[in-house]
Length: 282
Image 1: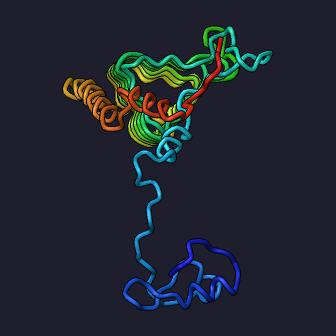
Image 2: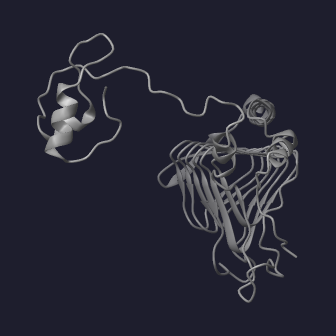
């Protein structure tokens, strides 16, 4: 029987090295690496016993509710229970899909039909981040505001309009993206940059501070520069892609069970398991 723990111990490694699998053949585990880097024995593939197969086991609930927290408010410095009077807490309607591994922190306003996908971080601890209707923020993107005003007419907030797609692994800081725009994956929008409606910033581009993409244009490069005007079909496709991502988000919401978690909460409480925060914010 192979032991299920690993230590840099000669005794343990020796025991693992001599163990046998279900078919009686000699097998190894990763622990044998410490004594013999050239060990050619096959790895043990015997299935591990699952201790949470019992549906009524308490571990079922601990697994669901001790996970990552998606919506995180900032609190008043003078109180541990009351949010700041400036409203530094996320506003997320029920129609918005927020992936379980995403983080929505502080003064963030998401609007109807928008979606924030896996491993995204959207953080506003001083100013505002506003995201419009049916806009999707794709996996791994980071959006933040500036901690101080950029100019007399720019307080450092980040604003993203309706039907806009922000691609995977982008970084947006204190910038403005108007409606029906496409920001290609891996792009960086520096503070004070601006993208007007019906425009595309190509993948892996850097839009420098103060640069402005005019309506209906395609920009690309590091730093990004004007390439050409968009066709009418390309502008329509931007809108269609945003609508398609809204449908994807609805499907994920259903598949993950995020649309109706109440039955799970009731089931947990009936078994005497406390779920979530039990105090009062106000």
